Image (cartoon, rainbow, N blue to C red; front, side):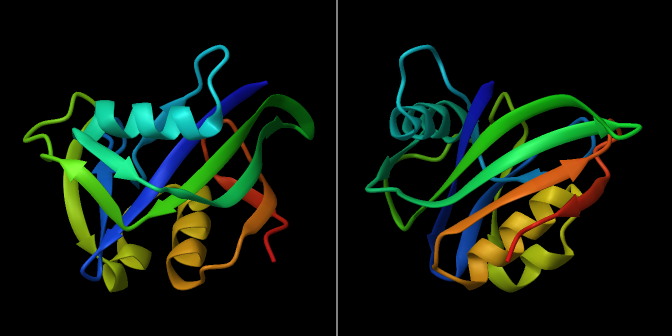
Amino acid sequence: MQRVANCLLIQNGQVLLLKKPRRGWWVAPGGKMEPSETVLETVCREYREETGLMLEAPSLCGVFTMCVEKQGRLEKEWMLFTFRADRCRGDLLERSEEGELCWQPLEAVPNLPTSGMDHEILTRLLKDSKMLIGRMVYNPNEELLHHNLP
């Protein structure tokens, strides 16, 4: 099962997001785990690679089972570990190979173009500091079918 980690870096009422070029959707920077890495090592490495910033003391705030179903059958499944941080070191990349980096005001996030799953995760984790655990199911076109987030 693939494991992915990302992070919401929040400073001064803004969150750093990455706009992916394929669909123009905004996401939290992050990526796939390498063999033998911990999720904490993954989020720190991936965040630095995508943004140039080194996270300081990120804390786990969400664990999600992500499923793709086609005609009611499971086609793909992975785990997403989302972290939150408010401190970092380094200089933000002027250009990321992964897409456009931009500080977005927290109140703007619900209106940004995102996938259905990212919309649910981002809006919930940015307004509440409690741990969020759930399952999200979507189709091969990345349309959210249903979820069991509280």
